[in-house]
Amino acid sequence: RLECGTAWVNTHLEIRPDAPGTIETRFLGGPPGGENRIETAFHHARRRVGAPTPGVLIEVRSDIPTSAGLGSSGAATIAGLRLYELLTSPMAVADLLSLAVDVEDHPDNAAASLLGGLTVSCQCDDGRVTARNWRWPTAVQMVVATPGAELATAHARQVLPDTVPMQDAV
Image (cartoon, rainbow, N blue to C red):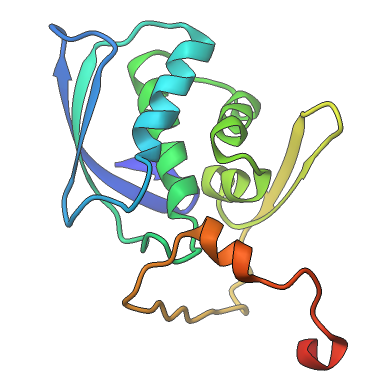
């Protein structure tokens, strides 16, 4: 299992020394809609860090719904980075966070998926990302209901209004 914050991405890993640098992903339960962030993050880390890897085949299962705004892309990004780290050498959390933000484009999902718990993050003007996390308070519980229909995050963000009238917010 690859740890992604407090979520786990369950994997079966097969090393393929005859195909160095390659990754093949099989999603049990169906492929995610859109980009395969596990492979994207793995290849991004390989390019940026430069340490060679053997080829790998992984089977992946995750309980995080896709296209539901619950961080499945962030978890997949961290899974790809952790897979790269597993095949090379341990990386500092700050380096993992930087790579994850490169792939995710915003630190909130990347930090939460990497660190878990209650997370806050900030991207500085120079691009550096700072993040802190705390254990989730046991007194705070949530119930999440996800619709059967998928909706891409980018599309959902496009339909939101730029401002919300105070009366609607209240």
